Amino acid sequence: MSAARPLTILRAIAVTATLPVLLTACGYGSEAKKEDNKESAAATGEKKLSASEVRIGYFPNLTHATALVGLQEGLIAKELGATAIKPQSFNAGPSEIEALNGGSLDIGFIGPSPSINGYVKSKSSNLRIISGSASGGVKLVVNPDKIKTLDDLKGKKIATPQKGNTQDVAFLNWIAEKGWKVDPESGKGDVSVVRTDNKVTPDAFKQGSIDGAWVPEPTASKLVSDGASVLLDETDLWPDKKFVITNVIVSQKFLKEHPDVVEAVLKGTVKTNEWINANPDKAKASANAKLEADGGKPLDAKVIDPAWKSILVTDDPLASTLKTESDWAVKAKLIEQPDLAGIYDLTLLNKVLKAAGKPEVSDAGLGAK
Image (tube, rainbow, N blue to C red; front, top):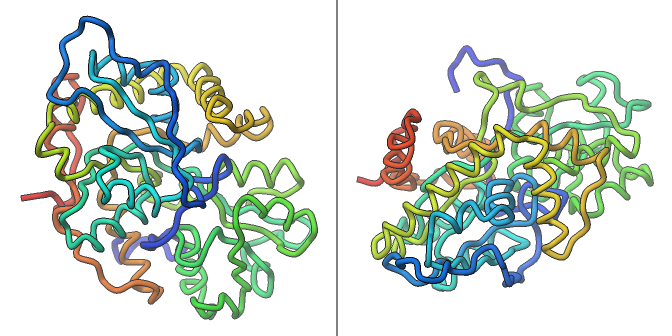
């Protein structure tokens, strides 16, 4: 972040948090759900790649739209030919990282916090970020009867998903830049930062135990449907109106042994993102159908419509924003300075993008050597 950047720029990353099912950018919980996915069945008679199957993890959340739509429409499976997809639905970043570490997962869609956490804890030996997936979808929503301006937040109770979570550190960073004081551990101070599971945040808002929330979509739109108003959209505060919310990661072992399979998956994600951006309404319906198929409930139109508009699917991992977010987490004194050198390997992604006539993307100097 340059010195000239407005002090109201916010958002940070922490290495421990993810967000809840259906109403978040990631999810809580520890159990992975293995799915029977008819779209991923290997095409009879087609030549296999170097692996007979690829195990792909994702969360049943809108910020994982690339995975939801790519699986629902068979766009990823089509690129894999006779190599079968074995999808696994996760409720939390730590459980997905555990699966990747344990060798039961090959590729995953996941947020920046667990990406950094998994990379640092494995001493740079476990994963690589190989593509972007989504940007945006984070808002500050408040009770309009109690809060009408940003200055009105002082003395109020504002929820974030979890201590050290991406939105939590973003809010702490914003508070500090306002000149207000909050203890990052307890959340007590000029603003009360109330760490609340996104699954119960709407009830907390209805009951009046919180005055607002700094949350991802579609939690924000759910709160708006319950009477809250949007006071701030984080997307508007970034210079290019983009910041990473979901990455695609891969096991370094799988990348080394099966680069052709990884490349095929990336061809599928690139084509999926292109299809989503060209067919937003169809893609929204497809994502909602996948959420329902995964055992959840489809989102109401009054929730999914505004939520969908605030999320941008993108092949670009927006690497420079990940570094900025990591620095904010360090500034908040919730993590130590991580060594992120080598966390990206965009070689195959840029190969796919070039072949598709699209511009290559940058690793911001954090690529594998």
